Image 1 (spheres, rainbow, N blue to C red):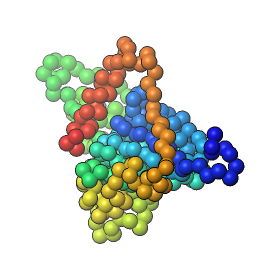
Image 2: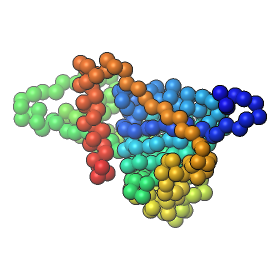
Image 3: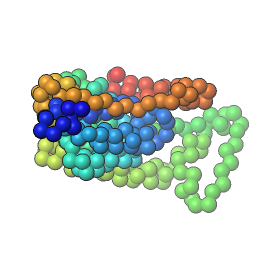
Image 4: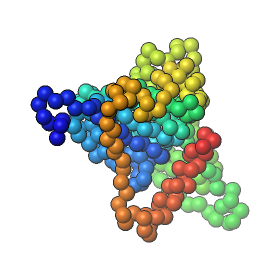
Length: 265
C-alpha cells in the first residue's frame, strides 16, 4: 500500500524475466514470441519498474523467433520508457546473443560464452542407404525448386547455392541488428561476425558486452540495497506432462542438450 500513498517514496522495483533454453517456433518449453508475449507485456506494464532485467541462457535457435522476441523487447522498452539490462548465464550464443543485444546493457559471468554471430543449416543425406535397401524415392513437383535439399536424393549444387544465399541474407540481418544495438562499442578493425565465440572478458574487450557482473549485485549498486525484484517466468500447464506432451518434451530436451553441448556445456 505504501507505493500508493501520496508523497511517500517507494523503493524501486526491477522486473526480472528468465529466458532459458532453445529458441524455436513451436513447443511449450521453448522460447518463442507467442510464449513470451504475455510475460513480457506484464513485466513492462505492471507497476512502473525502474528497469527490466533479462536473465539469458540460450544457445540460440530460430532466427525469426529471435528477431520477433528482440523486437518486442525493444518496442515495449521504448513505449514504457524502461531500460533493459541483460545478464548472461552459461551462454548467449547465436539467437541467444540476438536476445541479449536487444538490451541496453549486457553483463555476464567471467565464464559465460558469448557470440556465435552466424547462421547454420544442418541436414543429412540418406539416398545411398535407400539405394542399398532397394527403396526407390518418388517425388513429383510443380516448380523445379520445390523439392530443394531433399535428404533422400543426391545433393544438387544449385540447391546448395540457393541455400547459401538464404543463409547470407539471414546473416546480414543478424549483423545489422548487432551493429545497430552495439553502435559505437564494436571495433572497426575486427570481424566479429564469423560465428566465433568468446568468454566474457574477451567479449567485453570486443564490445559485445558491457561488463562482468551478476544480476543482484549490479542492480543493487545501481538502484540501492532496497531495490525489489519481481520475477516473471513461463508456466507449464499440469497436463502437459502426460502422453504426447511428455514425448515432445523428451525430444526437446535431447535437442536442447545437443545445442548446449556444442559450447562445452
